[in-house]
Image (cartoon, rainbow, N blue to C red; front, side, top):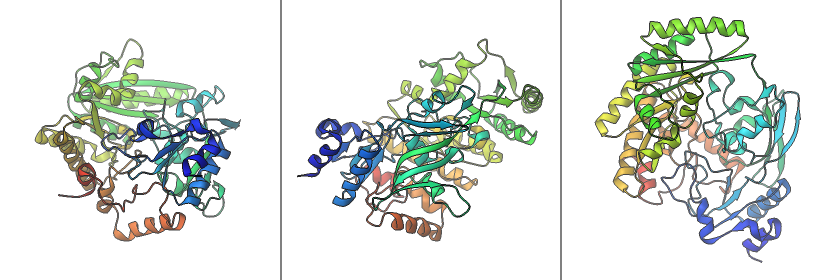
Length: 460
């Protein structure tokens, strides 16, 4: 019996996909590189997933664990004929008690809060939260709008069930001794497969209030971000959109009648009504001190927040594809970094639209390109490389939430020392000595497959 038939005997013939239909799994949210899956298998429950992974390990078959495919770093692209194990059907809610909820890895982020009691919510909310799966969120340590106050995914993961590369299933959680749990959060599927997750829920605040402010320069907006924290305020959300992003959004279905200004800050405060009132006064003064002006949308700002969430897909009005980085920089560096990004865009002759989590300095420059024009993609990659080098020079890190995947491999040597990289490689070898799980990602080790991967992985 061949591998296809053995997999079909576990999940049913309908759920093993080959040929042209398997090509649908050649991409994830990072569309610059096309993968080549040998086949796709879609287990329907935890038991089937365990049997599938054990069979692949027994056969020595390389494979990629995949959720709903929203990765923006190419972390789930099968570069070399790997089997794709799609976990989207594992979307059960197993239990909910107190401030905890246990779910399958395939459940969409948005459905966690929907399945929680009405007075509780799940805090991490990446822009793709309506479709991105919890397993993928954990694998990338995803952030979102509310990361500035509630933290990224790692702060909301209480435990996970994983299947390891030797086929054993273990429940990992925090305890009085060293725990392997934090190692798996952000490991991009290179150490094991997530089978279920126990997540932390937060009580919904008594009051949530949005504030919006316009600025005539991104430097002033960046200074205001720093000033808010210096005033002793920790907003529950603090986002920025620059003029390029605003103009793109206003041409799309996410149009919000936003003012045509150099920068727009979207601020959310939460807590008791008394605390929010005090914070609003402080933030208003910071806005004024940094040459900003508050605006008061008729709808309370719902359309502006939707515009922020829709900024990524809105880029489709400019070009059919785009790159986006997610390097984190210190908040104090934001004014200089934003000015530097604008200069890079002008010098390269490329539109760079900045929309990002300003509260934690998590930049998201969006760089459009045309997939059918190689020089367009090369120019976008060169522009992103210059932005990344600028961010690292200013004290930043390569990734805040999207992961390294295949997109940022060459920046690992710039950020980490060789000794630090050796430690990470040793961890990988310890868990996965045969390099069967998601090879080539995060730590690299593969040779370029084509011109595009050469551009991404090698310096000219």
